[in-house]
Each structure stands twice: as C-alpha cells, then as structure tokens.
Length: 291
Image (cartoon, rainbow, N blue to C red; front, side, top):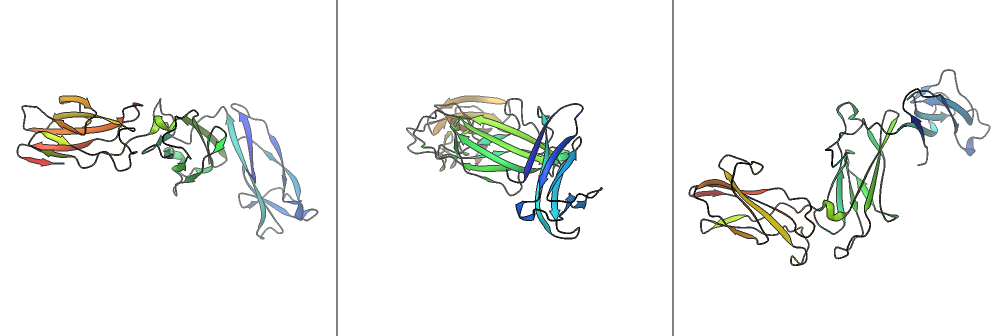
C-alpha cells in the first residue's frame, strides 16, 4: 500500500532498523520538518530525504511539514509485523474456525465475514482486506465499525466450485500489524436462514417453508431438516429430548404422549451437509401453541 512500510521482525531481541523516508519529489531541496505521531522529533529531522531509526515496536506515523506548525505535506506509516504472527489483536473464535467467521445465506456469491477484537485491542483498525478466488479479486466492503466485511463473488449458483476463496485481513493496533487469513469454498459456509411460517395443524402436524433467501428451484437446491421435541421449559439447544429425527419434507407429524413440549426444526443443505440454520420453534402447552 502507498504510504505504508511494514517491517517484518522476528520474536526476541529486535535490532534497530533504519528506514529511509521521502516527503516527495515536489519538495526536493526544501527544508521540510518531520514529526512522529504529530510531535516534532528530537533531535529535529529536516530534509526531503531522511532516515529514521526504529527500535523495538516503536513505529508510527511520520509526517513532513514546511514548518513545525504547518499542515502535513505527506506521510509514511511504519508498522511492525512479528514473524511469526503472535495473534494478540483478534480473539480466536474456536480451534476449528480460527479468528474469522464467514457465512453466506445462499449460493449467489454474497458472503459476510466477522472478527472480534481482544479486550485490550478494541481500537485496532483494519488496514487492508483482500479476497480472491483463483487469482481474481473479489470486491468487499468493510463494516462501519471495522468488525467485519461483506463480499460479493461473481459465482454462478449452478457451477461446481473448483477453487477456494482466500481472504486476508491486515489489522493494526498502535504500531503492531497482524495478518489473518481464511480459505474456504462457498458451499462450506452457506447457512440457510431461519425457517419461516412454522405452524401446527390438526394438533400434531407441523409445517414450515423454505427461506425466501434460499436458492430456487428447491428440487435442485434441496434442504434437509432436523426435527426434535424437547421437554417444556427447555431451549432447542437442550439435550432433554422427547424425540428426534431428520426429514426432507416441509412437514412432520409428531407422535408423543405429552401435551407440553417444545417442537424445534432447523435446516441444512442436504447435498453438502454444511452449517445448520438457527432453530425455529413452537411451544406447545396443552391446547395453546406459540410459534
């Protein structure tokens, strides 16, 4: 990136690194002053071409000015990247998922990736996000709060994916820069939306619809459903099961003796066995039903 210098340094004792800076050819032979993070350097640094010494993690934003109180003419940000990365800026979501969580509602190519800053790095900022599939860039837009990114791949839903999507996120805190990467097929992250229109009829037959955001035709992009009944007062995440089953139909007849229970249903792509949707539920309490 323009105006950014990254110093890759090993863990342990770090040598002093001399970094050449230039205010720009337009200021050749001009008596420009240099500041670091808005403060005039001590001893003073003057000239269009200068060299700064960077010790330990002491990078920063170096700006050049016509006078100590003048506006910045140009700038160079010096960041430090430890080799290998120590990963202190973002929280690890899980051992299998890593630091970045990605999901997509269907196969149209739109996907969303998120991350969480650690407690002591809440002000960390994203320097660069880069997404590619087989050497072709995928356009992305950073969330307003810098905690995620929306991307749109030019993917045909009917094509079989031959190449993985590669995502790289460069994020920095103070002068520390860290790089986080993730690689996936779209089919691995497609999570159907919550199932709509769940209802009970004839006292024991539950029915629901495919999500509006899911691909059509449903015969080609088929879903399978996990259905279960748990004891009254328990959530759908509970292991307090009365019954459990799977089906590829959008209806299910429950045959249980109790008249107080919670019926739960969720969906996944039956061809890829990808992520499950969030649970939809109906609370059955004798003659009353709340879905």
